[in-house]
Image 1 (cartoon, rainbow, N blue to C red):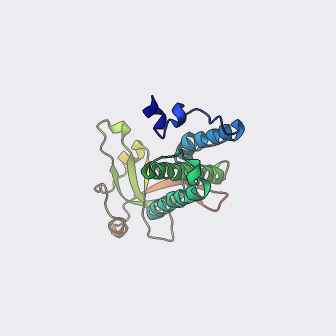
Image 2 (tube, rainbow, N blue to C red; image 1 turned 120 degrees about the horizontal axis):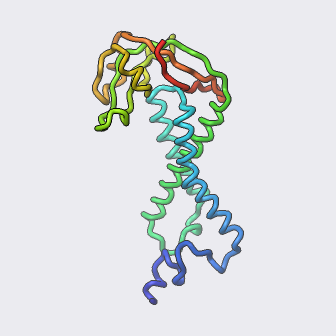
Image 3 (cartoon, rainbow, N blue to C red; image 1 turned 180 degrees about the vertical axis):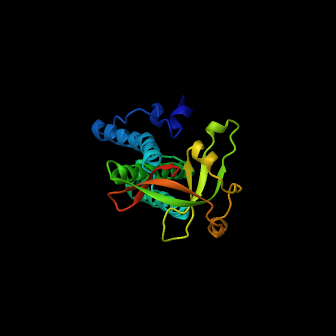
Length: 216
C-alpha cells in the first residue's frame, strides 16, 4: 500500500481522477470541464468543420498551416500549464505527451471554430473548373473509398488542388488516372481534360470554402 501511495499518478493513494482536498473544488471542476471540452470537443468540432465547410486552399497551405497551428498550440501550453499544474513526480515524457495532445486537440478546436464561423450561412456561388486527373484510395469496398479529382479551382492560376468528389462524378469524368502521391508539380504540368462545377462559398473571413463538386 505504501508503494501505491508513492506513485505519481495516485497522490496520497487517491484516484488520479479525484479532486485534491487541499485545494478549492470550484477551480478544479472548472479546469476539468475545460480540459474535457478541448480533448473531446476540439476534434469533434474540427471534423465537423472539415466535413461541411472545408477551406478551398492549396494543399501545401493545409499542411503548413496545420503543422504551424499544432506547434503554436504546443508552445502555448507552456504558458497555460506550468510545472506546478502537473502531479508531483510526473515524468517529463508524460508532460510532453500531454502538451502534444493539448496542441493537437486545441488546434482542431480552433480549426472547427474558424471553418464553421467562416462558412455557416455564407453565400454560395458556382464555378466551372478544369480537371487534369483523378485517383481513388485503396479500401476494399469501393463505396468507402475517397475519390480525388485534380482540379484547377482558380481561373487565373495553374495551381492544382486534389478535391474529394462523389463517385458518380469520378466515374463519368474521362481524365487520366494517376498514382496516389503524384507530386503537385507533375499534376500542374498535365493538360486540362475535363470539367466540373464547383459550389464555392464566400466565407466571412475572406476565405473560400468548398460546398460540393458536380458535373457541369
